[in-house]
Image (tube, rainbow, N blue to C red; front, side, top):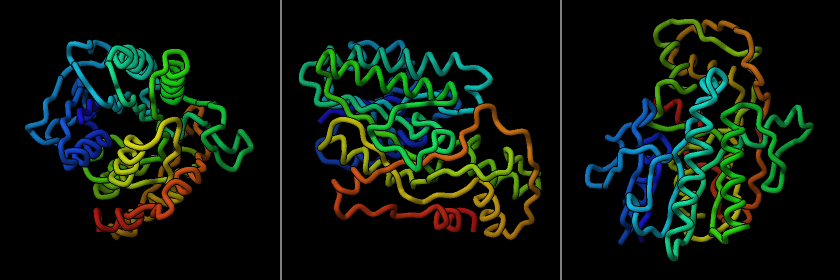
Length: 300
């Protein structure tokens, strides 16, 4: 089994690569342009690494593949608000290029698009409790809009060209080796250094969290068994404010909250219905490591 993984040196991609590296008779090729968010030392040295932008990848670079798993993406929402062009390039043009390559690979078993629950938009403004796989997409940021566009391109290729595909839409991930710019590492670092914690608005934005290794395992299980669109959730929901307070308690440090003007277009609440996944996996364990347990192990 030959698996091509784009963005395989990133936080979630590297977790997936390390997981499938344990699967017998599996050949892995990683594609990553090694931006600030990537770390080649997160994957085994003997795995071939193509240092290239997915917009520039050709069929000659890849050759034969059983699966193409597309983790490569620009993903920082604040950065997308300030400059959306890199997001259009990677998340739309890059995905399109990988689809075009996938169409040329004989007997490709599946194109796997790694997406996000953010494509469904804000549940509060939509007056919805949660989004299932049939819910229309209503993204709020250039990040989520470009991810939604990538999803639609994959679906269109499936409909028009018969490309076998899987799209996974996952909630927020946490785990070791997450980039320092992300929410959890930033909060912990600021509290340790007695710096004020900037909190958008009232800090009551609700997010769902999943351990990155759980997500990687589910993606692999779906890759080898299912097609179509699948929500991956945990039911482990936290407000941003409660996470900050919890880290402060664990570190036994006073938290100095600094309320700042809310992010433009900031979604209040994400919530996905992952009952389809629970029905498939009757023994589905919501998560093997809760966010509270992870925070305690990491910062305690």
